Image (cartoon, rainbow, N blue to C red; front, side, top):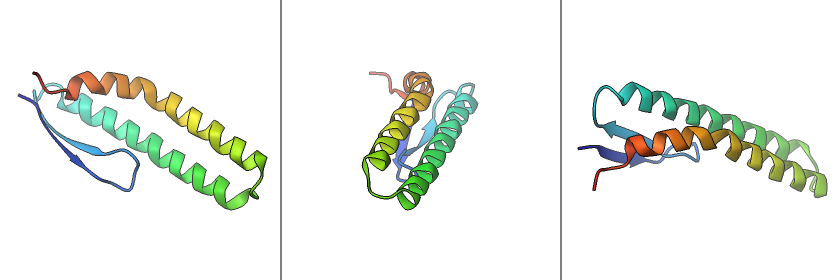
Length: 89
């Protein structure tokens, strides 16, 4: 049985405490680490854009593009992680 505990972090992603088959735990931790790095980088870039660009269409467009890139970068990792952490029904 797989047991998950979600904890809030400074990152927009929740950390997941994984207690499941020990042979997949390193993979789960690695995927979580990559997702956290992606989220942290996104947060830094967003903060930088927010602070440096004036409030204009250019800033709004840059933030939309940044968000889309962030979601694209996360997609494959989330897709790989999801089946590993789902609880059997």
